[in-house]
Length: 183
Image 1 (cartoon, rainbow, N blue to C red):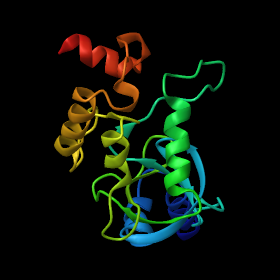
Image 2 (tube, one colour):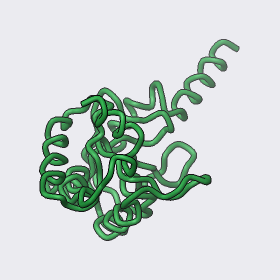
Image 3 (tube, rainbow, N blue to C red):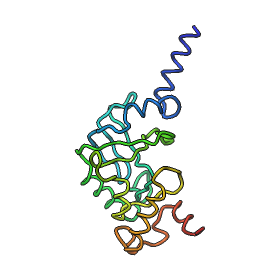
Image 4 (cartoon, rainbow, N blue to C red):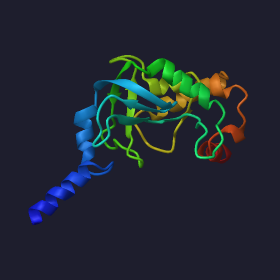
């Protein structure tokens, strides 16, 4: 009976976003190539790899935050459609290289956290979003490219690229508004 309980616990842990699956994520996804099958919004996409009991894996791009589309009664944010369209144009149906951060492979919603490269050794899409003015550098979480992303956002902002052209404080996400006020 004890062995049966332990086995059941192990299976449950493997199917959740936290716990032992993180090591498995690294061997399943890190530095591997997958096809993008769906773009949810500018910073979230699905790849053609099963994820536990789901037919595809949902990825949330590390270190960037694109404006949110209208959802659950919330209005669409400034530049949300443009960010999604850019992601679709660049990624949908294409092969991408997925790179994980060893310390944290999932977010609180169970999505795989990743840097996505348009091709192995090619440009990092996360950074492209910032350079082209489709995203904010998300400074709320530590990650290896945080300073690089902050610099890319600064350049886009200085040059009024993309969402930065005429952006007002109230058009920014709440976390960014707080950061701007505290700066």
